[in-house]
Length: 582
Image (cartoon, rainbow, N blue to C red):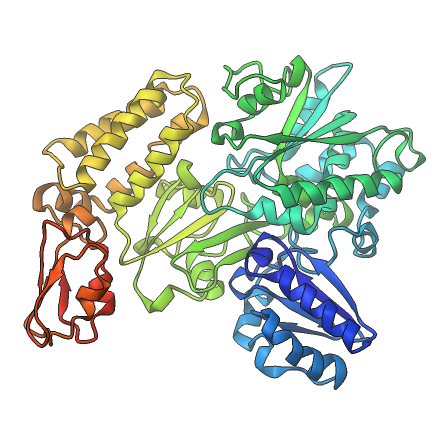
C-alpha cells in the first residue's frame, strides 16, 4: 500500500508537509505496512493538500483538503480497515476537473515521484531518446516535430521545428540549447508545476532537441524564486547522469550532451530571448537588435536555440507516439494541447491541459466550474502583461493562437485570470501597466517613459481625477510605445489598456466624466453611507479600523467621510443591510 502526497508549491503552501509528517507518524505508531511518497501538483490546486492512497491491487482513492487533523480518520478507515474514508474523498464533480482534460505535458504530474527516476522510466520515460539515438537522424527528428505542428508555448507560437532547423543549419564548433524557465506572468504557474512534478520530461526533451540541432550543452534558465523546481531539477539531472542519459556517450551512441542550471533574478524582460542571453553572459538583462537571430549568433555568439519548458516537455511524447498523434489533437493551425493556469475569480483554480480549439467557455465553466459565488463573468485576462482582456460576449472564442489574437489578447504562456462583475477594468489595466513599467529595462525611451506616462494617466483616472482627453492620450501613447519599442515587452505593454478601451470604454468614461467606478472597486470613487435601516447595534463602529463611525446605541449611526478609508469593513459587519456603497 502506498500513500502519495502532493508536494508541489501549492500543496506545501496549504500544509502538505505537515500532513505527510502526520501520515508517517501514524503509520509508524500503528505498524502499518505502507510507504509514504511524494508527487507534484496534479492541477487541482483548489483541493490541496491532496493524498492518493494506492491499494495493493493498484486501485487509487483520492482524498482532498487533508489537513493533519484528518489523517487519523483516513489511516483508521482505509489503511487499517481497508474501507475508503468517504467524507474526505474527492467528489464526483471534482473528479471531472482532471477527467475532462487531455494530458500530454502534465501526463506524469501528480502521479510519479519527481525525485525518483525509476518512476519516470516506468512511465515510458527516456524511451523517446533511446528511439532517437537508435534509429533516427537529426533530420528525421526535426521532420517529426514538423509533422506534429508543435509551436512555441512560451507566447509567440513560433514553429518549433523551424527554430531547431535554423540552429542546425548554422555552422558552429559549439551550439547551445537554452530552456526559458523564467516564468514571469502574474497568475502563471504552468512551467513551475512541470519542473516540480515531472522534471525528467524537460530533461529528455532537451536531450532530443540537442541531438536534433547538434548542441552538446543545454542551459535551464530558471528564476531563483522557484527553489523547489531548481532542487528537483538538480536531483533529476544527477539521476539522469547516473543512468547514462546525460553526459558523454549517451546510451553508447557517441552523442554527448549535458545540462546546467542558471538561476535568474526574476526580471520579466529576460523572457525575451536576447535579454535572456545577455543575462546568461553576465550582462544586464537587456534586449539586443535582431538580426542576427540567436539561431545564428546567440550565447557567446554561437548558434543557440531557446524554447520554454512546456514546449520541450511535449517533445518526448511526440517522438515516442509520433508527430501525427500530436497533430491530430487541436486544430489545423493550432495543433496539440495547451496548459493553462486558471486564477482569479474562478471556483476551481489550478492547472488544466486541453486540446487547442476548445472555447473559453469550455475551459472556464466546463472545467473551471464558473465564477466564484456565482457572480457574473466579466472578462478573462490572457497572455499576462503582454496580453489583453477578452470580454464576456466573446466567451465562445476558440482557444487557438489565431482566434485569441483576433480579440486583441494572446494565448501567451497560458495564464488565464478570470474576472467577475466586481472587477474594475480601468484598475485592471492600471495594475498591468504598473507591472510593465516596473519591469522595463529602460533601454527604449518609449517603453521607459511612455509606460510611466500611461500609468500616471490611469492612476489619475482611478483616483477620480480623470480629465477630458485622457482616453485619447492613452491611445496615442499606446501606439507610439508599440511602434517605438525594441522588444516584445514594450511592443505589447499597452495591450491591456487597448483591449479594455476597446471592450470597456464606458468604464473609462464613467470614471472621467461621471466620477463613478461602475464596478464599485476604485476607493476614491465610492462612498459608504448608513441608511435608516440602521438599528444602532454599534457593530459597524466597533469594526471600523479608523473610528470613522459614530452614534449612540439603538440610534442611527453616521460615517465621517473625511476619516473613511473605504475599506468596507462596516458593510461586511452589518447584520441589517443598513450600509450602502455608492
